Image 1 (cartoon, helix red, strand yellow):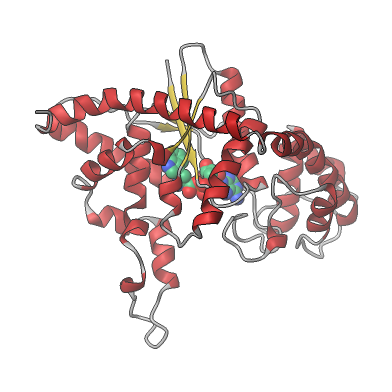
Image 2: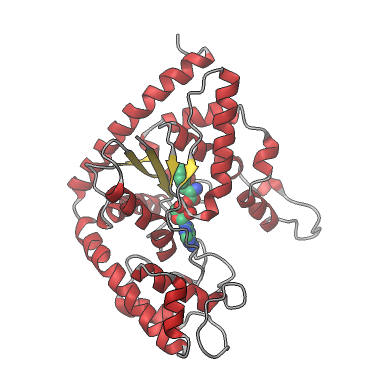
Length: 342
Ligand code: TYM
C-alpha cells in the first residue's frame, strides 16, 4: 500500500489557496485510498517557528487548524491527524539528515533565496545580510524531509510551490540509502492530483499567501458570504473586454476562472467558454456564489467543532500516539544503521 504524508503550517486560518491547492486533495485522497493505504496529515508547528510567532496566537492557530482538518471531512479514524511537535522523532531525524545535507543544496532553495533577497543590505545592494536570518529558515527543507521520511512515505500531496522541497527530500533519502548501504527510504513522489495555483486577489502575479499584509488578497475558510462577496468584487482583473483564460496576459481574470472551475469541478477552458461574451461583473458574482457554496459546509462544521475542546484534545492525543509508534519503527532501523542503537 501507499504511505501518504502531507503537512500544513499553523499560521492562521487556512485560505482558499490552501484548500483548493492542498486540503481538498487530502479529503479526496482519503475517499479514494485503498484500504491498505496509510494516510498521515500533520500540523507542522516547528516549521511555523522559522518566523516570529506570538505564543497565544500560535496556540490558537494549532487548535483551529486541527478543527479545520476535521471540518473539511478528514476522519481521525481513517487518517492519522497529529501535531508535528508531539513527535520528537521529527527533530531527531532532521538532525541526522542535516549531517548529510550539502549546504549548497540548501542555498539553491527558492524560498531561501527569496528570504535572502528580502534582507539585502539597505546601503549596499550587493551585500546580503545573513545575520538577520535564522538558521531554521535555512534548514527548513531538511525538517520537511524528516517529516516525510520518518513514516517512509511514498506519496506527498502538495501544491507546486513545494516541488523543490520534495526534490531535496528525495535527494536526502537517496544519500541516506547509499551511505548506509540499505535502501530503507522509498523516494517519495509528489501527488498533485489537481495542481492549482491560486493567486492573490490583489496582486495576481504572486500566490495567495497567509503572510500577505493585505487581508483583501485572500479568502479564509471562515469568511462569511458578505466577506467573500466583497473580496471577490474588489479582485484585481484587467480592462480587456470579455472573458478569456490566458494566465500570462490576464492573470487576474484567469485566477477567477481557476477558482470557479475548482469550486465546480469543471475544466477551466469549458468554464471560460461560457463567459466569453460576458463581463467581469457577471463572472465575479458567479465566483463569489460558487466559493460561498463550497465553504458554507466546512465553515459551519468548523464553528461547531472548534468549541469541542475534549474531543479535539482526544483526537490530537490519539494521532500523536499512532504517529510516534509508526515513526519509531523507522528510527529503530536508522539508529542501528548509524551505530546509535546501544
Ligand atoms: P504551507 O503551510 O505553506 O501550505 C500548505 C499547502 O497549501 C499549498 N498552497 C497552495 N496551493 C495552491 N495555491 C496557493 N496559493 C497555495 N498556498 C499554499 C502548499 O503547496 C501546501 O501543499 N512546507 C510546507 C509544509 C510542510 C510539509 C511537510 C508539506 C512541512 N512539512 C511535509 C508536505 C510534507 C508549507 O509551508 O506548506
